[in-house]
Length: 430
Image (cartoon, rainbow, N blue to C red):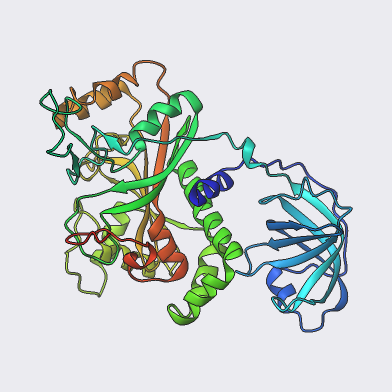
């Protein structure tokens, strides 16, 4: 449920009512506060977001972060402060004295004299509904045919030709089911296992892995979708760093030296955006020799994705508007002949490559009808086409690979090392 909670937090709706400002002798970033050499009661002001709250009988402990450091600043407050508004994700302005900490976990802490909530945050009001999408399904959402078919044991006698009367498979994505539910609840998400029968033993592929997926109605631009994706990545990363500091530090110290600085670099910068066409041109001009020659109309491979991230300064980069021929039938046609692209987006991150994949969905009945007809899928997806007949709205969504996200945060090179029981080609132990 960790991914579900993170999604709620990333997609929260927060009040932004202005608060009165007070002049102080020193305004510090969290990084500067943590690095202060002379913490002898200097009066300071720190602004940021609450990452954790711990309330005791007479003392309230907050951890505040503003994105300038992977570590949070501990704020110690009197229990008289109203802790009901001091919740995870709320933005605050804290005034007080910077003093030496009695705890061994940090050198300094901020003794609060005044705490103002700049923006309340209540995840319950985010509007996202958690949907438990089925593991057994009759559709191939990705259209790649990499499916595990489900059949009853030969010992079970089934009177009909097939248990379900139709072929069924382990799910490759909950997206199509989320699209159904977004028509009722506007904003929905799921977090659960997905399966791909991909014949690969690479360091970034598994046959069974977890995905956080979201679907949002009344979403009309890739820009809006990318904002949610970036927010989810940053919130997830900050939550892991805040809640599991010892585990993260262990990985960064012994497995991925320098990963802490790389993460900090990612978190403090806005993610970049390039088109697929621009990406291909960058790859063509590269001095590096690729195993797969980059050309317009061909898929981007891992080696291409990692090069693009490095080319962009090791900042996560969105690649948008892929050729229609490369993507599934449900992605929205950009109507940009002669190139003919769809409103698709992938988020590439350092060390991993693709972490998110998403798109605007084709909400226009006749466009979707033609795509299905050309693919010979009209009969199988008539139910999906019918969604466009009854109150269809612009919408979009994405999926984030949970294990790949952990790889990126921890700096672990092989995806098989971030899941307890990895399943891949020729291996299914226990």
